[in-house]
Amino acid sequence: MGALAAATAGAGAGSATIAGAGVAKDLPRAFGLARKLCDEGVPGACTRLGLFHEQGWSVAKDMGAARKRYQQGCDAGSTLGCVALGNLVWKGRGGPKDGTRAVALFTRACDGGEAPACFNLGVMHLGGDGVAKDGARGAAWLQAACALADPAACRDAALLSWEGQGVPKDRPLAARLFLRGCEGGDAQACAGAGLAYSSGEGVQKDEARARALFERSCAAGNKKACAAARPATEKAPAAP
Image (cartoon, rainbow, N blue to C red; front, side):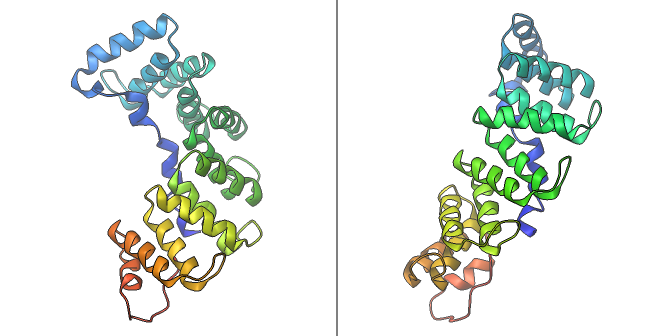
């Protein structure tokens, strides 16, 4: 589906978080510090060191070394390390591609509260990428990411329930998920919630609230919602 077309971008999620503030100001010093702390057993430092190797910051790019450091971080309790290692394993970067192992790594990270890991599990199961295709499990993982405040996951989970793709059609659930995604700042989720209130599907029809949601979506950059936000156009709003 269209909303999931860019989902694989989530495979790189977390780089900024792993890097930490101010890393770019002095990469060699930051690399040395990360290596020292990793050697001393600091999990997050090993994960950060892996990112240096993956991105080629201050050292030559080396996906094998990145895997090694991410593994150290993950084994020591860094859930971000598990996400980062899962990304490499999933895509076969720096070593064999292994969907089963990637699922295990993402599951561990998702259970530890990492929304990108839950999101990636949703993408894998919905697309049958590295695992057997399973719409219900994919939707469940997206909802788990949504519960961890990932607005894009809320939007995609809502679209699945709204359209009945891989899961039973459930407009009330879709409306709730759209609203949650909208609250998190996702423009398409706001449009989806607006469509629900405009049509009265899944929620009680409320044109004023629908217009407000379309206006919010429009303000967030969704041009398709702008016409629906204008009063008196009387044109049925397009699907989000």
